[in-house]
Each structure stands twice: as structure tokens, then as C-alpha cells.
Amino acid sequence: MRALLTLAFAPGECAQVDWGSFGTVAVGATVRRLSFFVMVLFYSRMIYVQFTVSQTMEHFLDCHQNAFEYFGAVPKRIMVDNLKTAVFKRIVGQAPVFNPRYLTFAAH
Image (cartoon, rainbow, N blue to C red; front, side, top):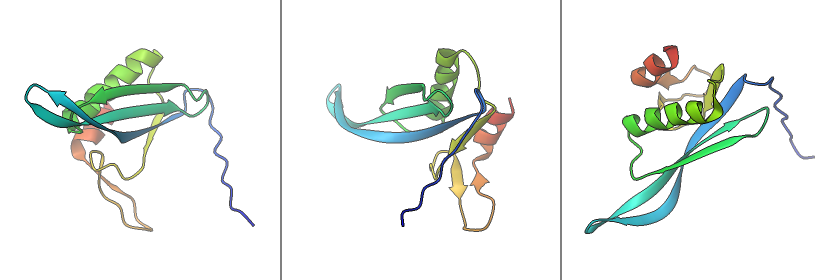
């Protein structure tokens, strides 16, 4: 028997964000890791992808802002997995400990 979890959301209710890696890229005389930020709207499955050379909080928040502008709106909720940029600590059975800067951005 296979486990299956179906998530259902109303339009604009929720999006999911994550970082991914896409090899490396030459930046001047150095080689940098190429990352990408992805945000997916659950209801429509509309997707926003932005490539960066860093996964810092500044890049993370900038990518969020660019995704919101691209979608033309801000979802009511954002789901994150265990992104180090957003989640400091996650213990099974307890609420995750989020980065305070991310919480401040979310409250805005």
C-alpha cells in the first residue's frame, strides 16, 4: 500500500519556496556555485524561478519580492521545508524556529 497525501488550497492561499543548485558559473576570475530560488503557487501551479550566486538572506528576501511582483500578489501563506535561510531549527513534534529576519519580512 502506498501513502498519498493530497494538498488542496484555494487561489492565493499558499505558495511553497525552496532553493536548488544548478552547477557553477564563472564570475570574473572565479567560479561560483549557481543557485536558484523557486516559488510555486499551490492552486495554479504557477512557478517563479530566479538564479543567484548566493543563498544569503538578502538574496532570499529579494527573490520573494520579485516573485510577488511577478505573480501580481502575495500569497496568504508561504510554506518552507528546512531551508537554512528561513528555518534555524526544526524538532519533530515542535514548532520550527524561524529566522527572525524572515518573520519580520513575512509580517510586512
